[in-house]
Length: 240
Length: 93
Image 1: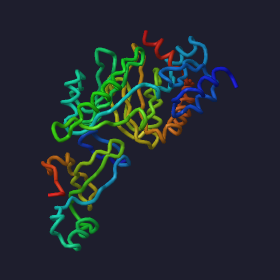
Image 2: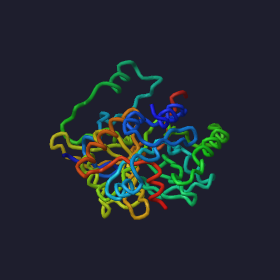
Image 3: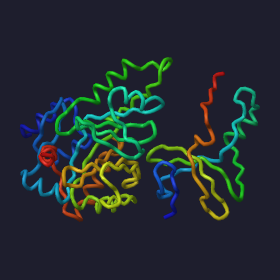
Image 4: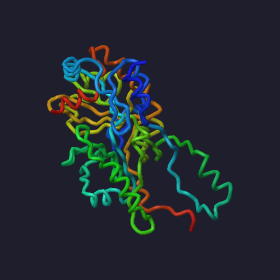
């Protein structure tokens, strides 16, 4: 057993697709007690893949959801700007992403490059404010534990999705920060276009129990375009 | 593939939806007889022609109402349930 593997096994939290990642013998990194894959092959080759077609596990990315009556008003009080339209997302000043999945259904993802812990802060504040007999502030959706989060990047990303879902995700049809909640390989999935600088990128969130299956489907479909699995540090590198 | 226009997500493959049965007026849950309640829950009218039904977009768990013709399979229109139900129903009163 390698030194890397030992460190990964000792972490408190691991990805929903940990075993699939471990089979690639990657470099592991510890982040807030979470074992994440920082890199699999050399950085230049991974960066090249990220521009062409790559899949990255972001299950460690801090996230939370709020839903129900009063959610939008409560989030506005916390200085969280909510997108005007359903099925769209926006970037906050601190780099966090807010995604509007329904009229009162908001998903918040932390900044990948520089963690702000906004999801944890909001969770803490919500528990302090929750008083349904006084004011409605919705309820918490534990998206960190309920959903896996992957990122698909590269010029072939839309073509890859065309093999697995019925929504046209090509750049001229599906603008940056648009959201599709649809079937992906027959699974319910949330797909958010969140470009990384000039590179097309899509966040894919699927229910945790279907994570391995979805990962396998994406990985299998990627083979047609010679896509590769990459580590988180490559994605962060792409942002700089 | 047949398309269903979801009021929230736009046109989607029909395979992304399930039908939740006819929209019916709920009898008073306190005073309704067993027969009336069972009729409301389980008995379908199965009409030929234009019907009003509950449908759900499965990936978003979004329930809405669709009017469709069971004879021609045409979907006439879809709209949010809030157009029919404007206030919360309290069962404990």
